[in-house]
Image (tube, rainbow, N blue to C red; front, side, top):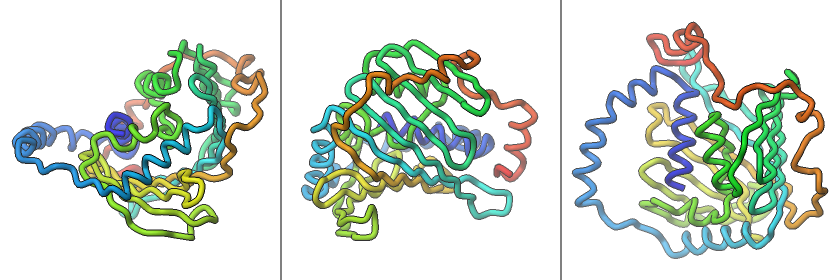
Length: 282
């Protein structure tokens, strides 16, 4: 989790405001020095056994099947010029086959996007523009996800669900984990709610009481001065579905115009307008 959510936090902060990121970086040196001093006297992690058992069971449920499909509805906040944050939502249909295949088709607020990984290449396809970026990819989903973020700023908010070891992804670097209670208001089923904290984030996780599959992830990031909230609801779970051989490729993407595989370019004028004196996006 520590590495994955460090990447996500950086991505979200950059998208929110160039000025806020600059301000956070300017304060980074003393904060790091303080963290170094605090490390010597940092108390041991407070990890409740029940919370850790639930997270371990969730990890086992996710890896018990070699393939799975689910729907991920992500809601994230972004600064506005009037103060309160705006909320944006995307819906992704996800198909994964471990260890080396993934398809994510995303719509919602903004243009539709499609992503295909077949163990050899990763393709990012924009249907409305008929543009595709293709790059060689490593032979595992975990390595591909980190490479896609590093090379093209592509991040899936449900990334930890996809990896080979979801339990390790979520629990690495935790300073606190505790059981919150039961809920019947998420995912149309009973869930057990766990809260976790690290140096990077605070997150609640709703875990199905019967199948132990994750139903909701809700996080805020400590490095975000606005403490914007990010939430992912996971539903329509299908474990070990029948998958067609051609599921992890697209004829339309193969015939689209090729562009370089790189992070989106922000024109200087747009970056200047985004930063502004207030540090808030319009």
